Image (cartoon, rainbow, N blue to C red; front, side, top):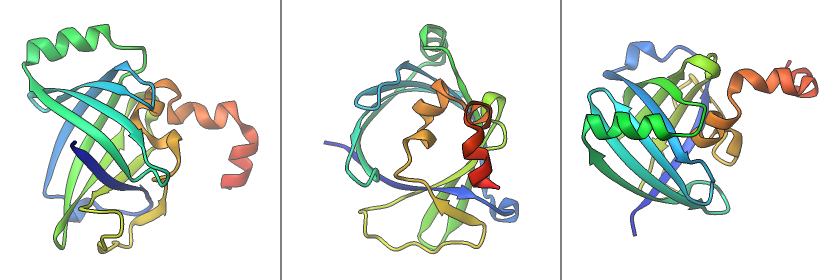
Length: 167
């Protein structure tokens, strides 16, 4: 069974000098249920279909199956997706033996910048650069499927008490 192990962090500083490559990603969800999400993604000039299962208790590990599909198929499936597409630029940042994926979000998620470290196992050490902020691996609001349903831009509008806590 293919498993993905990753930790997710807010980005709080400038990472741009360390970027090795950047790619635009547009994705939508045929099913955004956290127990079994089905994602359609256009990454650069390639299409992908991905199925993700539920995460473990810490949120770091979950089932992930991905298959490359043609661009016409990806575009057709994107048109069938639930409302709320994700639009982001993914920047790859080499860091020791790891590559951090830094996603800068646009559209309804403008203002959100997340970094993900894919690891061999939950306990694996990786170097944390100074621009890496709070870990949000365990917070389901930061899952892309969640961001498609309830975008980052709506969080403060919907919960003024949360805004007071963040100040």
